[in-house]
Length: 187
Image 1: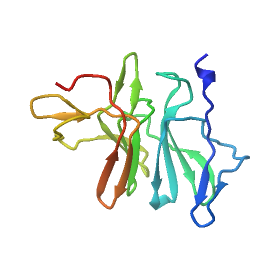
Image 2: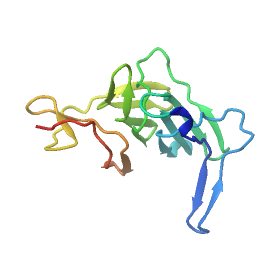
Image 3: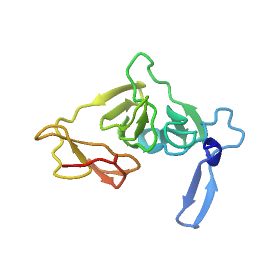
């Protein structure tokens, strides 16, 4: 059974660079623990002194157990709460391996592995307003990329289809590191 080959966790740990020690932050008695998972993305929300978690999987490989939920870990109270999302608006499909970052009160979600009958990587950038609880698709216009990991849509337009990458927001610049792409030719 592929599902039972994996051990998933939902605990939160902090590393002190001063003492070089790890300490568990979340409470064992928390009545609303986040679902155990792997392959999720997280980002620090400075305005709320919280950590935002999106998606991942609580299953095995492939499309088993893909998640699309959003959880918030409050650093001061050391507790979990599930984000309240407007159910009347379009939202990203369940996925694992996406990357996310927070800018102000906006949580950005990019890429990831999706399966809804067919398996694919998402090239769209989703934006969650963390205060209003509403998702939207961010339109940045055409992306000009000369080579992999981009997939050419037309003669001049490319899209990124990436999973399992990492991002770092430094000031107003976003840095994108590594990841994987679907197996295909770029000719």
